[in-house]
Image 1 (cartoon, helix red, strand yellow):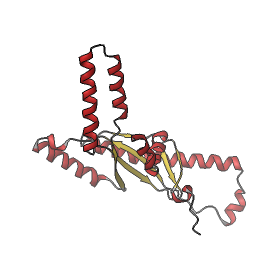
Image 2 (cartoon, one colour):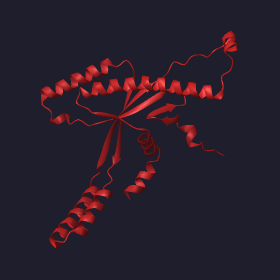
Image 3 (cartoon, one colour):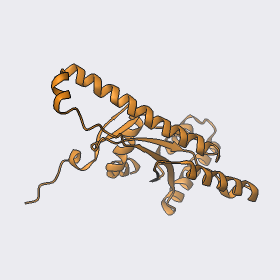
Image 4 (tube, one colour):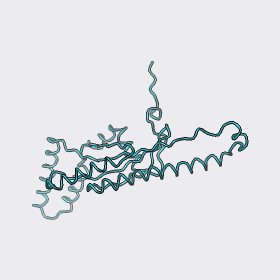
Length: 209
C-alpha cells in the first residue's frame, strides 16, 4: 500500500513572510514580476543597444538568478460578462445585435485558437552563511537563552537576511531598467496566489469552464 505524502512534505517552502519565501534549507527567495518588451518593433540600433545592456546586466551579477515564464490560457469570462451587461443596458436594438454578434465572434475565436497570457518573473536567491553555534566554554559562560530571546534573535536574523536579499533584488531591478524592462516585487499575498495556481492547475481550469 502506497501512502501519499502530505503536500507540506513535498513543497520545499517553510513560510512566506514580508514578500520573502523562506525555504526549509534556510535560504531565502524573492520573486519580482517583469514587464514584457516588444523587441521586434525596435530599430536595429535599439535592438543592439538592448542586447548590449542585457549582456552588461548579466555580467554584473555575482549571484544566481532564475527566469520563470508562466503561461496560462486566457480567461475571457469576465470580459464576456462585461459585454453582457453592456448589452442589457443598451437601449438601441441595433447596437444590442452588434454586441451579441461580437460576443459570438469572440467565443468562436477563442475556441478555434489557443490564446494564452504570459507572465515573466525573476527569482532572486540568498543563502545565509549560518554560524556553527556556540560550543564548549562559551556556551557555558553565556548560558541558555530564554524562549523570548530566541524569538527576538530569529526576527533580527530574518530582517538582516531580508535586507541582503533586497539589495540583490534592487540590483536586478536597476539592471533590467537599463534594458527598458520594469519590475515589481511580489507581496506575500501575491506569492501565495502564484504558488496556489502553480500547485493547483485544475482549479484554474474550472474557472475557465
